[in-house]
Length: 317
Image (cartoon, rainbow, N blue to C red; front, side, top):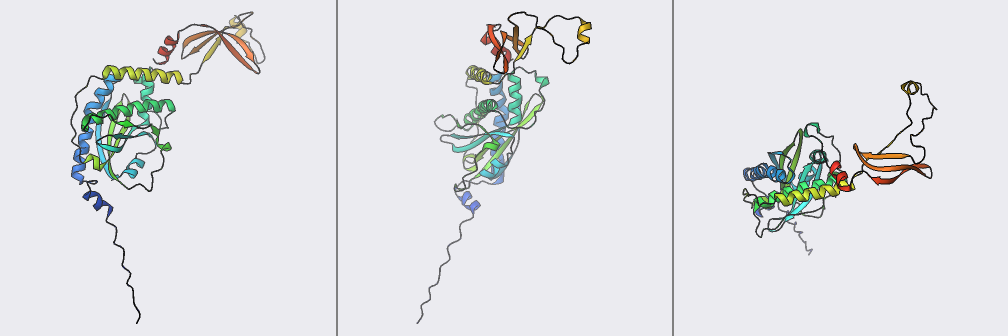
């Protein structure tokens, strides 16, 4: 007699969405939209005050809407023209993401370096430089501050931000990590004539347990403003600045100047050491003398026309 062994089929895996609903990781549309709008109103009401108190620069913030989906998909859909920072807040969520449009950071850098508001136009889309990423880190830090003030996570912990990066530099998601449902809260932010988008991307597991409250100012304006100034000063110190050298030439008549041709020579005004004025952005900085090193002409600093603080203040506007 032959014995037949019946193979038992493996049970089908539970639907991912159903499992997420059963474990508190996926909510219904109405609930998601309600809590997302509360986050939106939190930022619209509180972020402009925080920003203005620390920078003296006014911005307008408005809630646009929200999108549900898998966290990895929501982050990839933010596009290439955003600066991103992964974040966590103890007793609330171990993983969420903050993002701001590159155009906002570029315009803010121009404004903080002295450009008049009416002269700053909508920037072209491009990745941020290292110095601009430093500024983006501060912007996203204020977004994190507003969030931690509004969710009232037990313990009063501060949100922790990882290093801000361009979207093109973000590492690919870990395929072995379990998929998690999230929501992307979208904000529209205006800085003068420049409009940009901010995003808060967080797991629905954290969103669904959150009661958003409107915080009160905690008197951190002066401290925050000092931090912005110190950080901006450091950024200016590390900035690449184009220098210009002016050399006084021999005095000529207009008639002689009008007849100059290729190959004609104009002598320097100084007969011995040639005096050179070095400036940046129209500010005279150093008095130098003309020299040469190998195949390149050089200038050697002889005296400071402006102090270090005067130079920094000028470059910072």
